[in-house]
Image: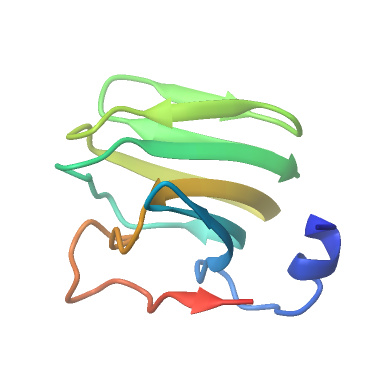
Length: 113
């Protein structure tokens, strides 16, 4: 599955697309730019793998800088905010149906491509 082809099918930022599922988890690609909201996931860790660009993941006590090929797992319950100064392409893995904002009321809908 060429991830670049999947990423080429959409242009919206902060709206992950599910490209595969395994063991109850969604494997997603996303394009992000700008600042996301501060949030946390109380029930699951948050997996980020940068495919292209540079991403900062702000935590309350530090900032983790990621480039292409870098991954970071935000532990469950840890408040964080991804920030992309330019467009970044990501691979994300989350438990199926996890709200991207940590709150189902404000989360982007799950889209499968």
